[in-house]
Length: 285
Image 1 (tube, rainbow, N blue to C red):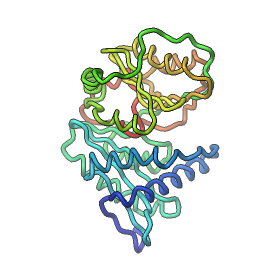
Image 2 (cartoon, rainbow, N blue to C red):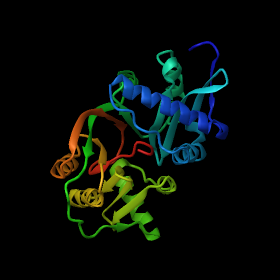
Image 3 (cartoon, one colour):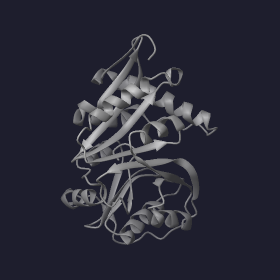
């Protein structure tokens, strides 16, 4: 590692620096792939995720510090025996110097003993190599994006109610091997909206971006996705479409969205649930 870099547990005082490092890292990634720069999320919205994971999983929260500023961060979570990597970033000027490797090692150690592992990765070849070297299997993923054609709002979908949480947790365990639990509350604190088909599935969206969808059957999954797209008047994005989610691929194409097939990858290993029909969350897996 570069001289003057130290790795230590993340603290509350690091939240702003971690967000700065995240914005710099992902903007650099977009520039390297000649993509338009995405506007960064509002700080308080992004900080919900950082503070939530620092509170629930302090053992998985690590930062690299260089000359008094945050140079990188790794955030990992463990949910009911499932380990997931929520974030791994290093500022562009300090990449490929061993900092990411050290952060990842500490985040991975937090999941020692976990029966399942899950990571959602960009197409950065260095990140993909590191995750495959952990023993995870790589599943290429596409992004669906565009303005949906006019769609009729399906019946049977309604907003989340307090009594829904028990069956939602059951579905989470069936699909990925672990409930989302309080991560759903973190979503909502960050301006996300949750819709459900009672007993059958749930979806989380922020504006036009679908952030999570889990269902017991493909009909319910398609209905939840269609309800998200039908309620929009602008651009939609649907992430993490692997070959196991053909129901979502077809629904997005039927709605007039286009596919970016070089989006990234879902990497998984160990004992998980069925993982379909399921579109995971970049933040909470």
